[in-house]
Length: 396
Image (cartoon, rainbow, N blue to C red; front, side, top):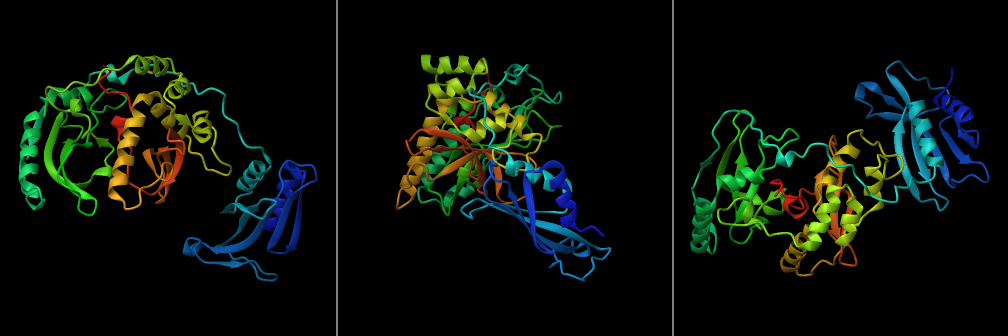
């Protein structure tokens, strides 16, 4: 009866004749590329038998003379190291097809992105689309309870600010700037922070929240105070009064920003970022081309288009100010101020991930103090606010 190593050796013989499998025993094999191949290092296979009734959590090393039962399955534990014995990759699979894919990636040179980052503009500008989900009249339901402010050390000042902010809330500004879906409808069940009060306690502080209703209710918003982690908010409008307040005007773009905006409209994302010194990493460029940014990655089919959608909406002229605010806050909140390059924030997570640490598009201040866009892996809920990286939803 053919073993897992027999099946995988047949894959090598058929598809990768430049590779040689050396078996140490029934459960261990080493694969090396022939002399002159591009890939130095070694691929090791350890065969373990997994108990299917335990969902694969129980396993034993394959042994001579011990048979594999009907509710058991042999798996290869694949470890790849380079010429310096540094571990490059580890995974477990029972699939000959997946084994072949791993070997192919192991032998292949790293992918290279296109020399220029160009993203075809969207055929439909959702910023100029005005659709609603129902015939409901736009309205804001207000809860003006200020009880959360009473515990603040500057409660009287915070209460005065709160009342001032309540008077400024403007429905027409909110309608103009509220994020929309691809059909131009207001996004439901989205929360934006309009203002924050007092010093945070364990990173939480009273915030004035505006939350959109369910899709069938829209356009309806609810306004209230809530204790929140301000840095976790994706829609943070605390420094963008024009998004929600009457009498506030969005700062006009200067000539340089208008030039970058024109480049973005043409899909010349790389040129627009270069104009403002925003470095776009090789990893981002690879994913924008539909390629994995690292070997052995299970790239989901939706990720390239999710990234392209975000890149089409970049506002490179906004990055520096947003990053400077975070750096300034970290310097004031920490006894030892962090250096640029030692922290990063995600713009969004890529979809379909269930692990605690997830991949997403992120930004940091690089060592030279300039913004850098990269694919990051993080478990943090902290966001780089959309208002600091995205073009205005109003289209104005």
